Amino acid sequence: MKHTLLILGATVIPLAVPMAWAEPPTEEAQLPDRQTQLPSSPKLEDQHYLSPRPLNTIPQGAFGDKVRLGYQLFVNSQQLRDKYVGNELNCVNCHMDAGRKPNASPFWGAFFAYPAYRKKNDKVNSFEERIQGCFTYSMNGKAPPSGSPELVALSAYAYWLGMGGLMDQYGVTGEVPELADAELLQGGKRDDFPVPAAISAALTTEQRANLPGRGYPAIPKPELPYDPARGALVYEAHCQNCHGSDGQGQAMGGVYNLPPLWGPQSFNWGAGMHRVNTAAFFIHENMPLGKSIQLSNQQAWDVAAFITSKERPQDPRFEGNLEQTKASYHKHDGYYGTTQDGTQLGKDAFPNLPPKP
Ligand code: HEC
Ligand code: HEC
Image (tube, rainbow, N blue to C red; front, side, top):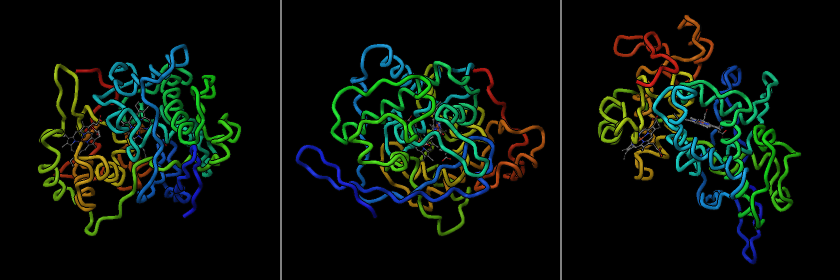
């Protein structure tokens, strides 16, 4: 374990810097889908996490307006329903506390991790392209075009969260420096990306790209192979009160305050959350809501298996041949193309970007 020293006034706080993250599995790296699985590291004890500035400190003016719009799109993505969003989810359902919560794939952790270069195909994934991926898959929608006001706003919000938090952490006062749209859309993982000297002195570009709390923390493999039938019992006991016995969540006046976990209004078969491991990591850390960590590792894997073994909207990369889509894109922990309760998942998958009922 390496330590850097964070000097804030007279206090000296040792800050743990996590080891380099494990390389993602190679078959994942081949997916031409911009949904490459995030490298996940286990949580460390006594971890210090970046703390974003309060939202009421978003500045006035044109730049602040972009940040504010980004926040609004993030927490109420339904304003883009039928245009770019094809289900009843909002970004905040999986990136919790408006993208501010560590270990819930925080938006501040993501900004400085892009552009990400993939060795395998030598392709660059900019920040806006990564967001486009979540629209296509997690939101079962359609990606806003490159450079669109929506992508600029979301990028500005992520940058403001991350940069403000780093400035506070390293004793840099003042407003978050404004950035041109093109810089925002690229993301902050560049050696020539403008950061205050106190921050670049403390963190390398690579360390900035792997801030503690990024992604969902890995939990160990379960002792028994994960099992949807055991997961159904966990679901009944710990989840169904909120998400419903049918997994369809709950809406009031057409607005979902409890999101659907499967079925036509949830994330699709290409989304990161349909992978059993990713869902298990998310659930173990973040669900049941408001109860902190309650489930055992085994329960988290089993209930993740249960919710990911139900039909959902089609993988947008499907071109008519289920076996082929499965072989090309689903070499991981997931149920796409497998037979559950006598039906092959993906065969009667729900449509992508359906009109709001
Ligand atoms: C159904 C849950 C879900 C929803 C809704 C969702 N995401 Fe994600 N998002 C994920 C998962 C899961 C990952 C990580 C993928 C992985 O580990 O392979 C991710 C990753 C990301 C990343 C990269 C994070 C990083 O640290 O590299 C960004 C940026 C992102 N999402 C933005 C968004 C935005 C913007 C929205 C709304 C338009 C959104 N997401 C909606 C589940 C979701
Ligand atoms: C107290 C109510 C409550 C309970 C209990 C609960 N959830 Fe959630 N869950 C939520 C809410 C609310 C969100 C959205 C979080 C947000 O927007 O901040 C959510 C989000 C999710 C998501 C990501 C969004 C989506 O629709 O896919 C998953 C997956 C999930 N919950 C699974 C579970 C599982 C599995 C359990 C049981 C172990 C569980 N939840 C228990 C309220 C709850």
